[in-house]
Length: 71
Image 1: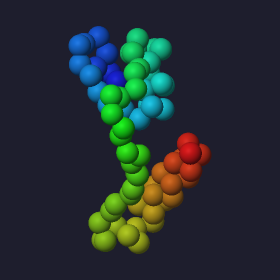
Image 2: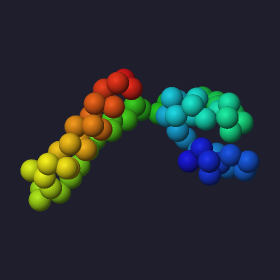
Image 3: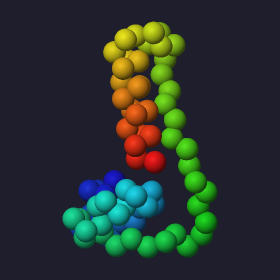
Image 4: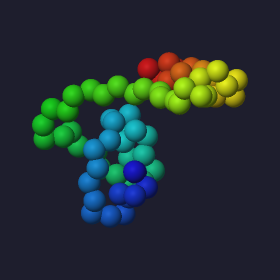
C-alpha cells in the first residue's frame, strides 16, 4: 500500500509501524486517524489437507517466529 499511495493524493490507513517504515523513504506524511481505531489481530489460516504437510508446517512455523520477533 505505501507504494500505491506514494506520489499520489490518495490516503490509506496503515498500522503505525508499517507507515513509519516507509514514511521517510517514500515521503509519506503520517497523521493520527480522526477517530479511534481498534487494534487488530493477525491470524494464520490454512486448508485441512495441508495441515500435516511438512513444507506448509515449516512455513507456518517461520511466520510465527518472525511475528513473535516483531512484537
